[in-house]
View (cartoon, rainbow, N blue to C red):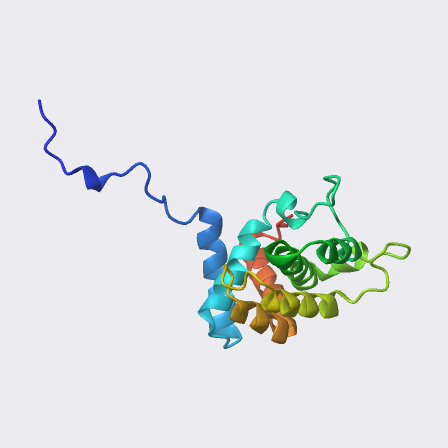
Length: 184
């Protein structure tokens, strides 16, 4: 018997759509930023959602590696590594520094303080200042035609504190809904 169904109704190579985590974070992030904070900037909110989804995996949080393959866990090390890179690779590291500092100061500020413990290379760094600077630098480096667009990174630099506040509100929302479970 011949199958007369159209072959385009079920394409195995088609994008399966957003994951459960993506849908969850998109809903919570949009609700928080659009409704509660009045920040209606879909590209920036989508970027923040994507960052949360990426950082569900701890290997993404600590995704920058040094020349010998060692994971870099401190912003000071990442800054040094960024200076060693050029072009789009340098842009990626600066963007990651922005994401890293925004994630910790926004979602888990208590952990940001632990990461900056006395005696560590980051002890004298202000993560908020470093995050703003990193996003701004990334917005100006070659590769700006790649995702994310330079203007989104520039807005993240300009609105770093507001976005951090929004992330703290996102965390409150998921803790209220999910009984206080931690993301990482």
